[in-house]
Length: 298
Picture 1: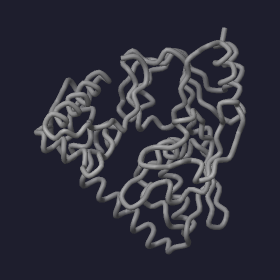
Picture 2: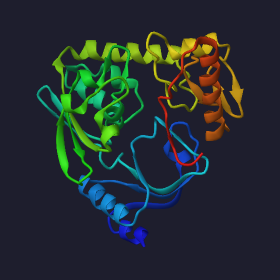
Picture 3: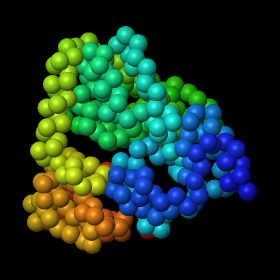
Picture 4: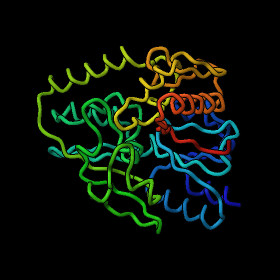
């Protein structure tokens, strides 16, 4: 039985784990098995076992960009999170394990008088997820500061990919295309004034509080930015601001966010996303693409 083999690999192992406890949307059914990785070696062992046993698996970070089916995930969820979150600063370089939060990474940079990661201070994801999708906000994105990332390839080998090899573009990277697993990343920053860095982070935080519905569960921006447009403006101009399906709502504060008003299901959110895509396309001829990743069976 694969579960017994996995139990021998992971210290933290859970059966029928509600995914709503591990996503920022606070929705989603149960994963058959949920484990927390504490080393690259354990991830490699687990993937070998799951491939041998023909069991589906998925790697997640902080769950801040995921919509998990109400039917859950039939297989194994491997979390790279709090057990793999070490951050090391040497001169102008910072190395962070994939489970480190972007907020912790940017705080470490600020504490060491290093500038370049202020944009990441309010992004609620982990380093692994940020590299996976080239996360960005305000005046920056991961590709501006990364030197390279350590990944596990399809053969179970740990390799270092340079910035160019990562093929980072808008909300995209080679990681997704090739099925790599990020285990850590290195960044190079510039020296700056601690006071100025922290002021900039505080400014970004204030702008977020002012413009984004941070008091409700969401996955941040629900859709990618279409070329030449802003998703939130297209949705608002389609008359969908405040539109509700079940417990899901197009935020009245920022139409680019779909929020869980308290009792939403993943199906509610998905239906509202589809409504936005269809309405905007019919009105403006622009097809919105989800920035949120859907996991499980519809």
